[in-house]
Image (tube, rainbow, N blue to C red):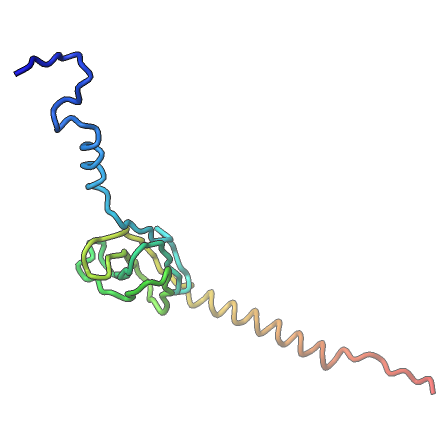
Length: 150
């Protein structure tokens, strides 16, 4: 058996090969990670749009708890977005999963819904009524003088 020189250009033992380290590092990275946007949002209306980029069919999971123990799929397919509407006040959590129910593909998105107060809504309604009545008044009572040049 020939002696090996420690300072030689040999590749070393199999576990020390750079290609093997790269392969092991890549094995830890999900092959089809997706990005869900917006990551955080506060909505005053109860509707919002979630969008994502994914290389495969996904399921959009909605939950009221951050651990997704009460999660349910609200969308499944190849689209790149989904509009959510009719949400009451509260905090809603969303994430993307592979369509086959396997891997989690995204970090969670946190959406806080906090509707306008009823007092504020009525003040907007009153302001709109004032503008409407002022417009009607201008239409009916601000007529130009008739021209009597005959």
